[in-house]
Length: 338
Picture 1 (cartoon, rainbow, N blue to C red):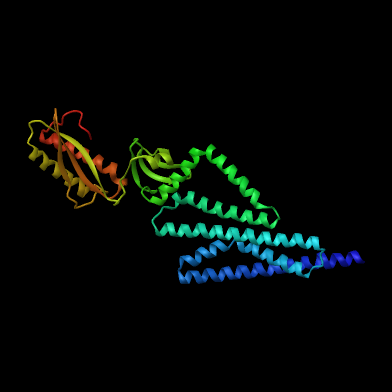
Picture 2 (picture 1 turned 90 degrees about the vertical axis):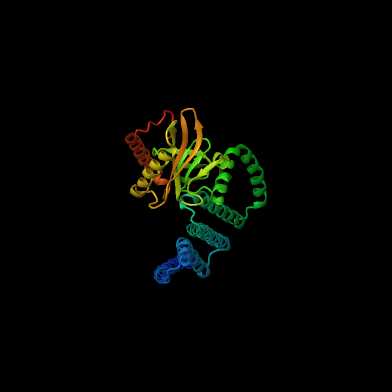
């Protein structure tokens, strides 16, 4: 009889209460989230949506923790079992709060990145850093609740971290170089860049280790972040997405440079107004710049909308110039840079 009373008073009744309390809390949670979603849709505020998305998963743990707490208050469990359940509730609360803070930090930075024109693929490295830092702090708090002294652990982590830093010098160099690249905003995903080492293309992602560039041939070029950070970079997207495409030509010796300039400007003007991607109405320019053994070098410059039009406009410009020079009887010397 005593065992039955102990079972009912210490386990069965509190378990039933816990299940009922959790069920009621989950129902209340679902109704609250539904009402908040409707309110957010009416208000159209991004901040409230960020908070709601961040608290959706942790609220599950809060319902469980509250249900356990109610059952604990109504039970006649011995002290040692009460201690275990009590610590379990604390761990659930800390764990859920850690998840909530990590989600909130990541989504807040995501919202900031969207307002600051930072492409989201690039921020994966920062998301990882934010999330890992908060999760590690939460784990340390949980260990402290369990009675594990974290002071020796922190000391060991410090010494071990120094050894790991020396062993992973190149990896950490790429990590911090990636953070610097993102923070400086001088190279962003979507930018068309050219490194002094010859790599050229559109930046598609910046991770904790490398920067991914897609070349004009649709090949992937993976460059370590440390190399990108130390390189001389031409960013064709800054300070403006509009840029100039330049074709180098050599006028043969003996030709009338004024005539060649007029013909070239006429051809370039036609390409500017007809080829998609060029800035229609923008006046092209011809600039003579070099005396050479086989003629006089000059450049033909056309404004285009962005880097995606670079190769197409250059292609049409070279074809149009070649055709017109042939019609005019102008023989372009060999070895001209196009």
